[in-house]
Length: 102
Image (cartoon, rainbow, N blue to C red; front, side, top):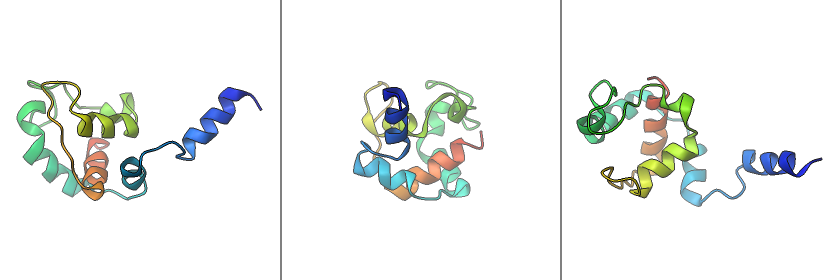
């Protein structure tokens, strides 16, 4: 097998993921709870309909970005003015499941 294929298999299996991301990705999210979390924590900047305000539109974000990227974006605080959030793994899984409905 080529190195690229082996690397893909390794990444797909979750190797190299930090414990938080592994925990999030192992859970089944509840979109309705994720919608509530979004309304409380995200809507002020991303809009009530997730169509953008201060922050960008999040409509279709799960088609453009991986779950790993979204988790990192939410938790890192490395792209101001987006603050750093630290939802527990279940809440992050719920938020991811809601974002997939947009």
